Image 1: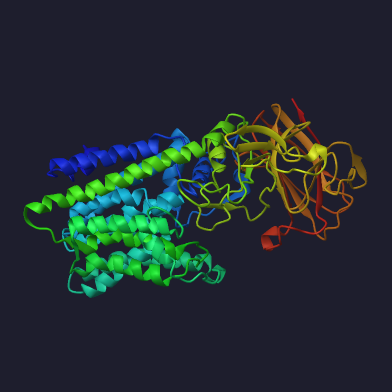
Image 2: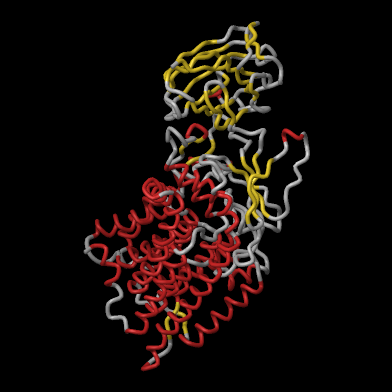
Amino acid sequence: MLFLRPWRAFQGVPLVPRLLLGACLVLSTVIVWGFRYQPGLDLPQHAHLFGLLANFHDPEVGAGAFYDFQLFTPYLLTYVVGTLLAMVIGAIPATKALLFLIALGTPYTLLRWLRAVGGETAFAFWGFVLAFGYSYIWGFISFSAAMPVAFLCMEAWSLAPTGSAVRRVVTLGGLLVLLFFTHAVTFLAVAVALGLSTLVRVRTAFWRRSFALLLPFLVSVGWFFARGASRNAPPHEAPGITRFSILFGGEFHIFEAYWAGIAGLITLVIMVIATRPVPTGPIERWLPAAVSFIGFFSLPNFMMGTAFVGHRFVFLAHAFAPAAFSSAVEGRRRRWVPIASGAVTVAFLVTCLVRVVGVNRELAGLAGLSSKLPPGSDVVSRVPQGEDDSDWFGSDQFVNSFAWLTAEGHGMVDDHTRFFQLPIVRSAEVPFFTTYGYVVTRGPKLRTGGRKKDELKLVAEADRWLLYRDPTAAPFDVPAGTVVRYGQGWGQLREDRSVTQRELSIGGQRYRHGLGTHAHSLIQLRPKATGRLTGGCGFDVQASADRPAVCSVLDHRENVLFSGTVQIGAKAVTFDVPVRAGEIVYLKALMADYESGSAQRVNGAHIDWVDLAIKE
């Protein structure tokens, strides 16, 4: 059967290495599935976004109008898989499922590549270390997911001289395109290594390999110019001496830490003594590692809008190093090579398991807060510096941990969609929301200050984690339903007052009830009943904008139910649209010329939505 094919690769493996392999599989399963939360600085944000995409246009919890899709992105493949899984099993189980697939796929594909190039197959155990090392601690899930695809690309390059030319070209080219749409930095390293290897092996399958490399080259160059080279920030943070600690300790700690470097160095010494690795001859075996080491020691940490680029190359160097060496052990002692490799891997996984136990104890209070958080709530973190560090996984591990709450509860956070690599980015038309109903912190209680009615209210406290309610933020009830969240170009959304906190007035007519906002703006409203939403929209009497605005009402899928142009000094335009109880609608106000490149904030663009009501 198809699902048994990967395990056939291990047929013929002696008993003890097979037992060690079984131990690695059991430990990997427990690490991923045995605990509520996983470590990883960025991982909670990815889990949150899987849930966001899975419910993008959900009528009750969706928030799609605050975002734009950008599918031509290097993270596409990971997010397609993660989103599809989240639709079926939820965001956090989907994240764990991806990590588990990575944990199984990395050693398996590494084994395939080592066999294809005639490498030391015992070093395939190292794939488990890669799966739970540098990228796992960072929470770089796309970076982790790229590794199995990278190994398959290099296996396909090695097999290019055999079999059908069309099949080999399509396989290698297709895998490289998949790698680009999984992680661009990994693609860059692999494509450079395979391109150089093709030039060196010009007498062996040169045209097959060249044609296979052509398509991913065109895709990557097309993406670069489509994004715009001028948008790339200047590179900075050049390599320094501290990178040596990452070189040896990167699989234990994501920043420069000498204890991690010593731990990695000890592991390396044990492996050298037990397996006696020696450099190998064929260029296709050592060139990927060489390219990665050159990148690690030469590239700055920040380039092309991406952080820790230089550091990431240490993970690639570790990943490709097993093919660059062969074991010099011979005779009967050679049976100890896979045993030593497997034993060191088991020890690493046991250490990882202990650390995951520890970090979940640190996060126990956060799990306790989740029961006090209403579904669909928006959350922001105010964890102070120092309190965001983990005793088990180091600095900044809890910077994004609050996003686990919204991954479970379908709320919103100040998410990572400001980064270009993701398949959704914050909408170019309307501002992202800046107020959040709940605040999460850790350690000492917050000093709220301000007016008594505006102070943060402590809702729950559990094991050093605290949850506060912000009474000034959405959600709040209005006659037509509940304002779930909003984003606007200036000021705060006001109930029954204009954005300047004066009486609502449009075209000389005063109104007692409504919402005062500022274009560009987007208000997410959950109707309280099924019927017809009625009301009006126009420029407030205090507005001073120099051009018209467009008021629109959208359904939860962003279909336009109503659209009308409003002028300074004119009466409100009225609308009457069908709504269903609990199914989100959006009230959107844009300046009429936003498509021509106008800024999101326009001076004096005060907009009022008035007399909002539902006729049942």
